[in-house]
Amino acid sequence: MVCDGNEAAAWGVALSRPDVVAVYPITPQSSLAEYISQFVADGIIQADLMDVEGEHSVLSVLHGACLAGARTFTASCGQGLAFMFEPYFRTPPMRLPIVMSIVTRDGITPQSVWGGQQDAMTVREVGWIHMYCETAQEVLDTIVMAYKIAENRDIMLPVNVNHDGNYLSYGVEKVVLPDQEEVDDFLGEKNTNWHVALDPERPMSVDPLTGGAEGAGPALFVRYRKGSCKAMQNALRVIQEVHEDWGERFGRIYAPLVEEYRLEDAKYAIVTIGSMSGAGKDAVDLARESGEKVGLIRIKTVRPFPVQTLRQALSRVQAVGVVDRAVSFGWNCGPMYQELLSTLYFLDERIPAVSFIGGLAGADITIEHFNRVIETTAKALRGEKFSEPIWLNEK
Amino acid sequence: MRRQARKPFDESKIPNDLCPIATELIDLKTGDWRAERPVVDRDKCVKCATCWLYCPTQCVQEKPTWFEANLEICKGCGICADECPHHAITMEEELEE
Image 1 (cartoon, rainbow over the protein chains, first blue to last red):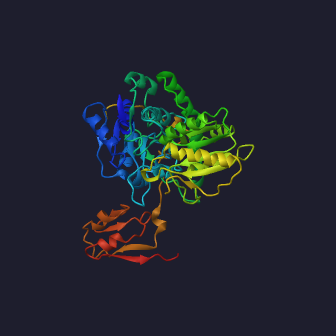
Image 2 (image 1 turned 90 degrees about the vertical axis):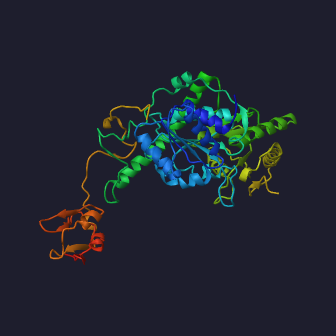
Image 3 (image 1 turned 60 degrees about the horizontal axis):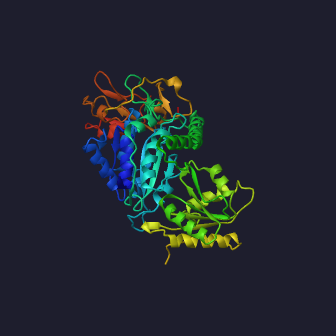
């Protein structure tokens, strides 16, 4: 079929058979909420759809539903995600396997309802797993996979499946709908509340006060923090296993953590994330035609950060240019560039890296922009220094 | 809820680093947080139960002809004194013993 990214996401939700969905509409996620409402009304999704008064309640409702044993879904972005932040922060340490789409949108202010990854990038350090998709098909497939990852007993963490507002949310593509029975078989039995439960037969206090500094509180706190970190590291393995399983069953193979494109004999590479990667690959193809030894690295999984997989990819090249669709205000660069610098520490040789920031507030990152990225990274390869980030859409 | 997963909860199968839960009650004596204690004038108290209704810690206990706070639990917030329609409750400073 042919559909946009938001409809593809809704189909991914439908195939995963959630029990409870709560959404509050916000541009550019709104049509995803509308598709889900329509699917519930048409009986395609057999779930309770909760119309609540705001995003804080959306996620709080899903906490309760998940504790009662439901498979749950929501979607948000931008200011909605900001309003959701209080329950958002407590979802991972409660180890609730909720799946949520962030249809990424730039951060206010200046006022903008358009695409950008500032919202999702800003909340990446809270304990949710974060995966960024490139195509509508990948959005659909990754949402189904996300349930299998989230509900894995070695993980039990919520998952954000992120797709670019405007470009993926409204961009129409050919999408293959997997067979429901095959998806059921892939996902297997659901059990979201084996660890914490709202159960009158066995009353318990979920997430109680752990006590003050003089008691067992700090030691308990460390235990649960370490548990969350361990689950994140387990996810590096499970995300790969689930993607491999998906590839074998459905024939669509995705790089689970880091995608390498034309990197075999590359001298330098550009790093992308999300939907911009398509234009990036086209630009790499064109540069290759004119003899440039350039490749592309696409980061799909941002949390857990795939340090070793990215290190392997980076070890093939001698210079790298990172294109971010968000800003790290305190570092005067893009957030993925900042994190890539940490990964470079694990390389035997330090290589030059350049930060590019583009696609803010709905701006398109075109092949021409990527030509500039490639040319600039080539200059860095030849020894030119770039200490400031390069803003691609600056006029 | 149409497809609810149902399995009995088994605490022993949960890794101890997974999620904080509590299955036993631990008494937290909030009385030692108190800076002021409510003192009831039994002549003025008509047992209307307004203090009992408003107490946020639900520590007000019924006595033969009056109500008074359980001082093991009472945090000394003073809401009962504020709400009492007969001004029968005064807050008195806790002094070192």
